[in-house]
Length: 212
Image 1 (cartoon, rainbow, N blue to C red):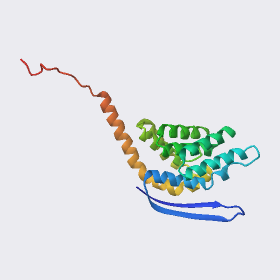
Image 2: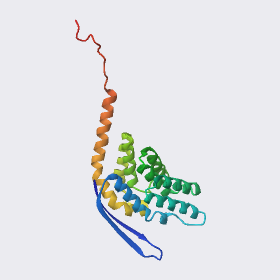
Image 3: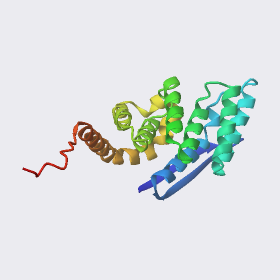
Image 4: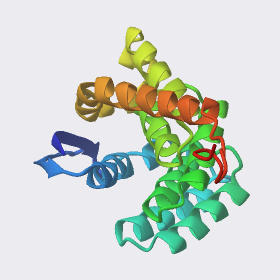
């Protein structure tokens, strides 16, 4: 379990700042929902609003609404619609990945996160950790270890390089960093077990083994 303290800061119309604090014990899946809630507060604010993009933003917001209602399949449809209207909308790929993850389809979740990071490597640092978790759950231990290592190496960079996401992620990131040594060890154990199983040979000695 994770002990999570998150402070959400966002601005309502008129410039009034709202701050919400969450402190509770959470399982990994609950932490992921908290991460989504964190970004749902300000993801739309990161999208540049011009006339061409307003329909895409509205579709994205509907996706967020369905996510918060735990209607993940409907959320996926609206995120996909927002991408049809505005290809390359980074936040929509994150929403798609989160929805597929919560539906238990880790391969589709990983696909969306990987695509997002391919077009925007500095969108989110903790996304590398989440992507590693998805690959671990899919028994893709090499990729999991690779993304855990990238997440670890990215600690050398300032959170400022990750834009608005960087600062807002710090509380959750601290929890992930505390778990990272255990995740790395688990990956290495699974990889060693896989290699051992691949090299082991079983011989059928037959029924005459004890005969003269």
